[in-house]
Length: 521
Image 1: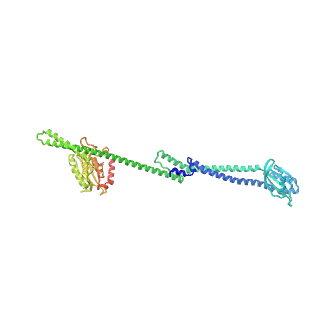
Image 2: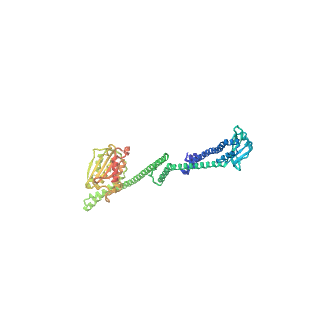
Image 3: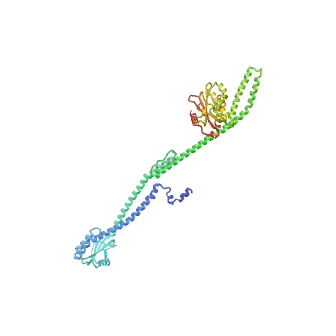
């Protein structure tokens, strides 16, 4: 199910909030329902209060009527008309009575004070005959009033008449309106206070942490990828910040992994291109060497036959000897080309490291003697036993010795062999040291490239160390070049003890540390 399908299942109200600010949503979803509930509650309460207020104002009229009922009855019974009027006026002067009237037992108006007198003989006669008190709304003098009737009786229970007290309906309505206005003002103040408290609380507890979280998101969007949000505010917002930080960490980790894979792919592509280039150069070199080998042999043979002649003059003999020297030099170049172009197809067999070292030293003896170099051999006899192609490894070691002889003429060379580091039984190591000038950074970075040489023109092809590098890779090993702290250069060739699957193991730690040192020297 897609995200849109899930959204379609959400209530319409949820979709309606989309695009609203949190504050507006809070006001609509919380404050507004709270206000409606408060208004509804206030209306219900006001109804009760208004009814109570009306009843209280009506009760005030009833209390006044009860207060003057006794004195008025005695004055009527004694026939004191002046006292009757005075009593009625005293009720009117209380200020809560609009008018006061006295009716006899036949319902005729006897005396009236103030306004609001109504003439309803039938009702008054009914009350005078023994009906209970009565309160009702009616019109009097053109105004709506509340009338309260009280029957008067003498000492013997004889009916003396009816007392009517009136109060304007407007007084009651004005009092109710005052109550409503006060209640509405109080309600408005309470709602404003609640709204303010909710909004201020929202800002302090939710709005401010959310604003900072949004600010953190904006900084990340602007490119500050290392920024992380602070965990603050309520637990839910803190969890959002934690989730954002975790997502950013995951993105960084994923990008780092992708970049690492890209770098690895770039390295592999570079190595593949180098391998293809070396293979092409190797095939070319092998072809050129084969084509040059036969003509050179013919030239050398003819030069030898001419030298056997007795009639040659010394200058001619010297020229022929020089020709043979150049032929031998060209044959040496041809051998290097053949060795560089040769693919590792020999059958590996077990051979001791000491045997390989001594064979390589014997092969390079003539070169060492020509450059007046002293060779030191140092290593256990017979040394670690390797499963390698002996001819290829001997050729690699002899190339290292010849290269050292060219770099340190009249000096010394030391060839060492033995287990690599402390991991005996897994790797064998050959080192060739000399006391020459060492390697400059530029030479060190290109020393194993084919056809790169520091020798003068005509003295070298630049293939010897490239052959060593190829032999190391063929056997699953490595070769590095570095400078000795005492001066001179050191080449380190590390080969696995066993070929095949074992040869795929990583080089020992001592070798990798030396390799790193060589790069930074």
